[in-house]
Image (cartoon, rainbow, N blue to C red; front, top):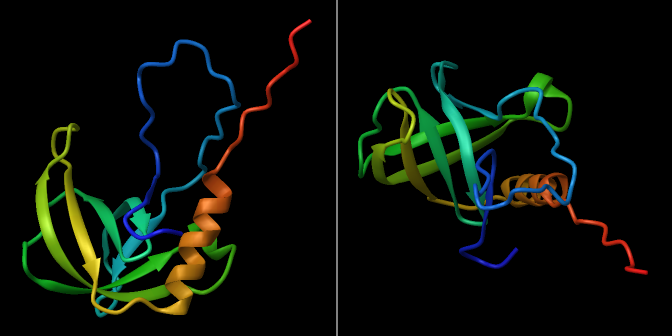
Length: 133
């Protein structure tokens, strides 16, 4: 995946009146935990090859480094992925009581890149166009 491109997880543009592809509802959130305490920190908002956006119920300290653990729902696919990341920004989300935080990974592992590719394949839905008569 090219650097800088991200995969949005859950936000859809409001400009479409008719859906060309089937909507796939996620059964679980992609949760992010503190590696040291095991406590839930928040959920993934989006990911890229060198960072991620976290959606949380509390603001995150900008400039701080965090050791995070990414877990797939129900542990269905693969092992949890540990990442060390620095918070670059944090602001209140559109949803009251939620905060969006942008993180840059301190080191990008092969496991993380495979995780991003897995999410990319899962969330890339291509519309099927019917030939006009």
